[in-house]
Amino acid sequence: MSDISISSDSIHQRRRRVAGALLLLVGALIAWLVSSLGGGASPEFAGASISARLTRAGGTGDGSLMHSRNAAETAAVAATLSRTPYIVSGGGQVREVALTFDDGPSEYTPKFLEILKTEGVGATFFTVGSMYSTFGPTASLATEDGYPIANHTFNHPPMNSLSPSDQASQVDRTTDLIKGAGIQAPNLYRPPYGAYDAASLAITKKRGMLLVLWDVDTLDWERTGVDAIVSNALSRVKPGSIILMHDGGGDRSQTLAALPRIIKGLRDRGYRMVSVPRLLIDDPPRAGETPPPLTQA
Ligand code: ZN
Image 1 (tube, rainbow, N blue to C red):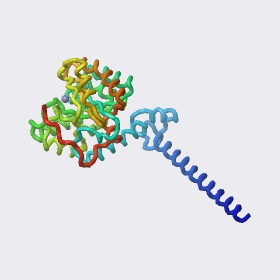
Image 2: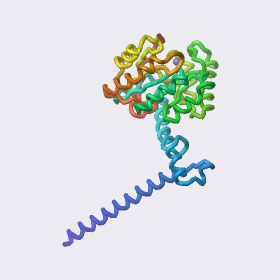
Image 3: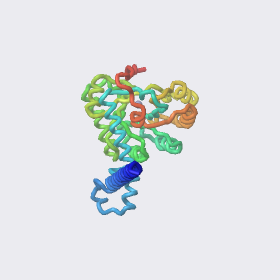
Image 4: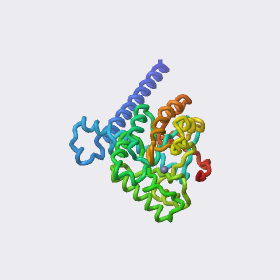
């Protein structure tokens, strides 16, 4: 009898512990909801209704779920930057690849976005500052849809031909234009032609920006045909690949036609297509294993 009573007490204690843990969990959930929906509210939201706050949580600003995701992405970029000033690919441990588009925003960018959104795949845009006077709103739309906007200099010079101060000016001017379009300051940077030097690395690292190269060049800028672009992408891809394409800098109709086929080909091979920050979360380059820098073709 005493054994049974001890056992029964112990069951009751366990139930109380479980109930306590559940209460803690519910409390934490409520605290999270309050903080994500109302915490840090900007003045215009101070008296907002629940529905307005829910709308806000679904948006992209402070307190939104999108913002929480960006926080994880920002942390992943910073963590990578603490190990290496540049990357060529992810760690190769996960069947994910990063699609990247350079030289926009341009008149082609909305068409690329339409395909990416329809297919539900991630991508990153490395943008040129001089394009913002005409196509800045396009970049804003891309970022609202969750596509990271990165820095690709102001007017696309080979950075290793510039003085450190001219390089810094190319980077800073573009960051200012990106911010001027209402977009978060970029933490990713790609030097035109993949050409950079020690000063480039120092400049970007000082600004908390990771220099992002690529390991798969579709050579779409050569415009040798849609088949060639698709083949270049699919024949060289591997887990963790960063794939280079262009949404600006010239006629990109071939790249546009190639993109759905590239997406299908990658899916058929079991790849998930993500942004560079997402790749850094899921498949970070392993410490001390960053491949050597690309040599300029
Ligand atoms: Zn470029």
